[in-house]
Image 1: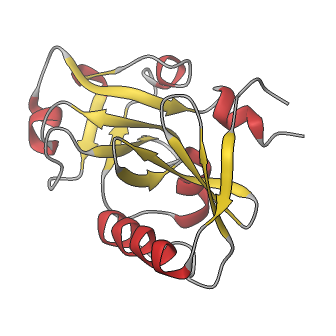
Image 2 (image 1 turned 90 degrees about the vertical axis):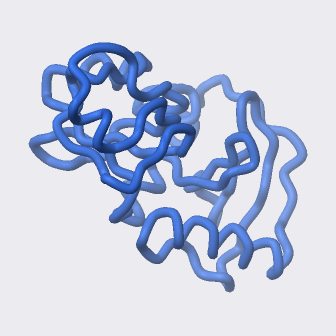
Length: 164
């Protein structure tokens, strides 16, 4: 098991679950966990984690609930996506920030400061979660500079936490 420190894990009440559920569903444009699912909240370095039925499928970064990479795989979100070309994939999966030249498509509703999920161009597989620095159309049009700050990616400590 990877070295990630999880503290103060506690079961959420139905009212709190509903709050996170509504926020994530409106943000992602798809159904996520159910209000009847057992959901725990735990502290970790950098962000809090949402355990849904024992799996880390959500995170809370600066007060905003969003999916983890495993959560994006599980729920197949329809909004807040950024698509990168295949040349950017090795860098993104190693934790690099996403540079504008590697972006081929993005949700046009993205505004700077929002949490987004990053996918590859060929298979649309989730690779990372990050915070946008540009709007969706600006990301696609820009030819230089950083567009997304990488927060969590495939292969990091949070990803490896659930590996056997």
